[in-house]
Image (cartoon, rainbow, N blue to C red; front, side):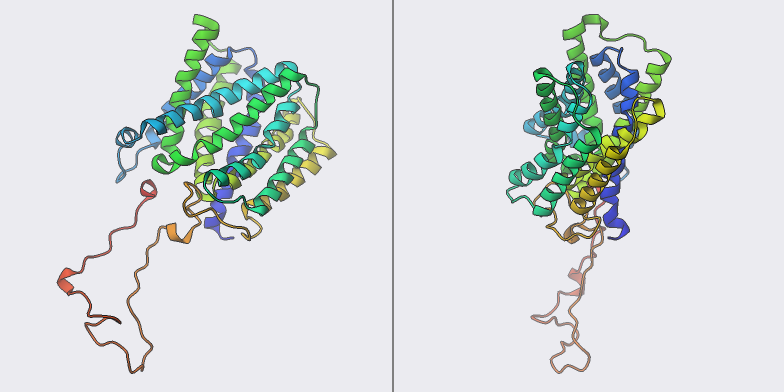
Length: 360
C-alpha cells in the first residue's frame, strides 16, 4: 500500500490508541459527577473545534447545517445519545457491579457487529476477509482483558456499551459525507454536551456541576482536547477513507493501548496473555484493513464512507483527448474526433478546478 492508502488506517489506529490511553483519565474522574463531567468535556471540545470547521472556499458551516433534514438531525441526536453519552454511562454503570474487563470484552465484539450490520444496511453482502479479521480482533481483545467478576446487571450494561460503540460508527455513516469529519465532530459534541446537561439536571439537580480539583481539571482537558477533538476527527477521517467496517476493526487497539499504559500508573500489568492478545488484534487489523494488501472487496461505491481509496473519487481529474498511433491510415485529421467533428474552439470551456475536501 502507498502512503495515501495507509492514511485511513493510520488515522483510525491513532484515534483508538488515544481512547485506550484515556482510561487513566477516567479513573481520575471517578468521584466527579458523571453527567457534569460529560457536559464539560463535550462542551469544551465543541468550542475547541469551532476554529477548525471552516475553510476558505467551502460552504459556511451554518449553511451546511441548515441544509440538513429533520431525519439527519434526529440521527445526530441519536449518535450523541447512544454513541457518546450512553456509551460512557453504560461503561460506568457496568463497572459498579462488574470488573472493567467485562464491558471491555463486549466492546471488543463491536468489529464483528459492524462488519455484518454496515454492509447489510448498505444493500451489500459482508466481506469474508473483514469478518475473519473482526473475529481475530474480538478474540485478541478478549485475550488482552480476560473475563472478570460480574452479575446480570453488569452483563446488561456491557451489552449497552457494545450498542454504544456500534452506534458511534453506524449512525455516523449517512451524515459523514454532507458534514465531513470536523463539522460532524463539532456538531455531535455540542449535542452531547446539551444532552449531558439535561441528564445531569434530571439525576442530580443543580449539583451536577462542581468546581473540579486540579487533577480533575487536567483530566477533563485531556479528554476534551486530545481524546475528543483529535480522536474524533482522526476517527471520522479514517472512517471516511476506509469505511466503517474496516475502521471499527481498530477499536481492538483500545484494550491493547489500555493494557500498555496501565503499568505506567500502577493500575495493571502487561504479561504474556496481553502480548498474545495484542498480536491477535494486530494480525486481525492488518488483514481486515488491507494494510497487508487489499485483497478483499473495497467499500461499495454507494457507501457513504470509504471514498478516499476509490479511484473514482480521487482528487485528480485527468481529461484525455482522442489519440491514434502515429502512421495509422485512419488517424483523424485536425478538427475531427474519432466519431464526429470536435466542438468549435469558441464553445470549449476549461475544466473547473477539482473539488476540495468539503465538496466530496
